Length: 268
Image (cartoon, rainbow, N blue to C red):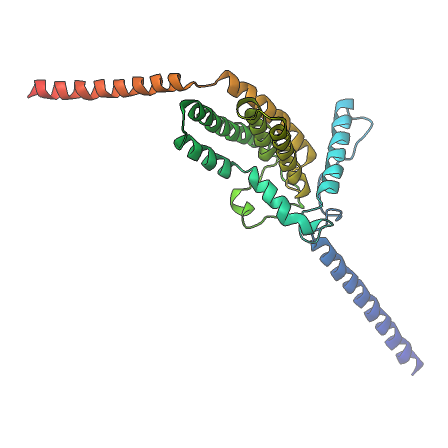
């Protein structure tokens, strides 16, 4: 009798222990699936170092670890459950203001509806600058192939427009390039200069708050965009040069068409 009661006690203890372990595992899974940038499985990078490694490798791993840690700390709007999740819609609006789609459509509309030649020339070169930015960013992203932070959450809009590669930040390159373009070509008052610089800063910061990029992605993007305007300035296309080029192409096409008609008449 006593043997059967002790056996039943052991089975009940084992059942209680298994139930406690299962509930703790379930709770751990729920915590891991939540949008917390401090979750243990948030990143898979291995930053372990050894004294036998070269000093360059040790320094690079140390800097990458700082980059990862700082990026996690800044991703306070990664989702609605984050510490600053209440302002996420506002941050996303700032993010959209630096997207290439509104910039391209707005610039092309201004180019078509331009009131004078000088304005059309500026808008035409801004279109070329935006296309150059898209091309250079795509090339660098394809070469580096750095994945986005795992705490990045895809939204309905970002699902169609956000690329899977992270380095560099296209928003940061565009913000820096457009800000320098506007400051050099259109802005002539101190108040507008402050607004333009503030906008570029907020757009770059929004990429970190939403956990879209790492800090190094945004920093390199700002430097890259700043240098891009120097290239745009060197390759500036004047309106007279554009008209001469278009007239030259039109003249070549007319000459080819006339030559074709003349040969056809001669054969007949």
